[in-house]
Every structure is written in structure tokens, then in C-alpha cells.
Image (cartoon, rainbow, N blue to C red; front, top):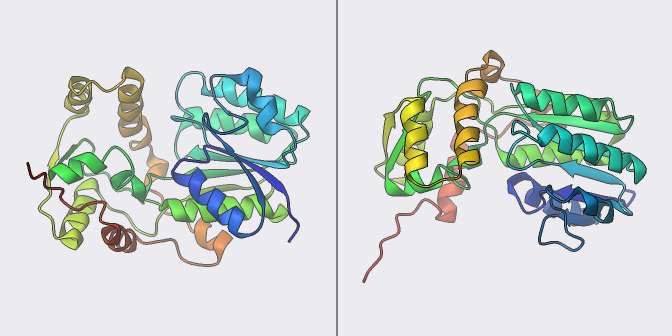
Length: 280
């Protein structure tokens, strides 16, 4: 396999960190794109992106916090323009399944004149263990809106594996992959599985989107984060395409997508959901 130079934007995040590990294990040259890296990559400092892009062959793009937020489209336009100047050979964009704003960003990459692959992902399994749902699970009380919507949760390890394939192989040029898990679960069913397998009592309660937003604000969470979560629960989860189960993971990787139950079993072994008891 030819050795190439990869810039992984968001290389310390859920998908990016896994992509970095997988590429390095294959002997590839990897540059992490983050604010703490050298050279640094900060979405708010486009004047410095050229340093991170310099000498790179291919780029994995994950935009923080989400392609739906104001300013994301302009940022992707500028990154694409600078990538062209830097003679980048390929862009792989992590996008959201059923997000209109994200699809506008996709079009920028698609029409850039640079080889590309679009990876659209459903809701991550790891939102329960590495993101905003971890604390409520540890507290034993999870209250969420859209409690009855069926979601084909996808594992970030599958996303990373697909992204690595897309970065390494030209056969994926021009493709749009929609990644989902192999079955539907509601939030209530997901929490129930975590509760049973982790041997924890975790109560799930349906809540309105308005009440959920108010609760986040009362906790002092940033307004842009509250807006994003409300958007994801209304516009994205309510989108009819988001209940669709695809076989794109199997198509790309030649294996089945990771089942939510397998994710829970593996996560329990890490101890991340263990109840922490403070002894004073």
C-alpha cells in the first residue's frame, strides 16, 4: 500500500481519533487537525488552515459542532477553496443523515473539482457513552424528547472503518454512503438495554422538546449547544429518511454493521457506565 499524508480534522474526536489510530496502524502519515496540534487547525482561524493543509494528500473533514450550525457552510466553502490551492487529492466529509443544511455543505465538496466521498451517519451509539447522554445514564435518570421515534443507531467504529476505506481507495470516489446500524431502537429501548446489560437501574422518562431545552438552559449549557440539540431532536430525528436502514456499511466493509447490543456489551467492559460512589 502506498504511503500518503492525511490531515484528519477533528482528529481527537469520536470518529477522528479512531481514524487516526487505524491509519497509523497501516503505516500511513497522519497529521491531527485540532486547536492543540502543531500546526494548529481551528475552524475559527481560516487564515492558518494553509499550514495544516501544506504537504497533505487527503483530508478527512468533521465540522464541530455540526454542519447544521450557522457559519458551517461558509467554513466548508473556504476549506474547499484552500484545499484546492494546496493540491489536496481527496476530501472525505462526515455529514448528517437527513440534515438539509449538511447537504448544502456536501454540495460544496461535490462540486469542488476534488475527488471526494460523502459519509452520512445516523445517530451515534457513542452518544450514550462519550457524549451528552453519559451523565444522565450515570445519574440513573434519562429524560428525552422524541421517545417513540425509531432510530438505526450507528457505531462510530463502523463510521471510522468506512472513512478509512474511502480515504485509501479510489473506488469510493464520488460516492455518498449513508451509514446506519442494522436495526431500529427507540431511546427508551436503548436505555433499557444499557440498564439490563450494565445491571443498573436507569429510569427513562419521555419529555417535551420545550421542557428538554429549558432543562439544558437551566443547567447553564451554551445557547448554541442547546440550539443544536433542539435542532437534532426536531428537524433531524423527525426527518423520514432517518428511520431508513441501509446496507452501505456491509457494502463498503464486507461485514455487517455493529449491532447496538454488541456496542453495549463492549462498553460495559470499559466501566464507563459504572456507578461512581464518592466516599468522604
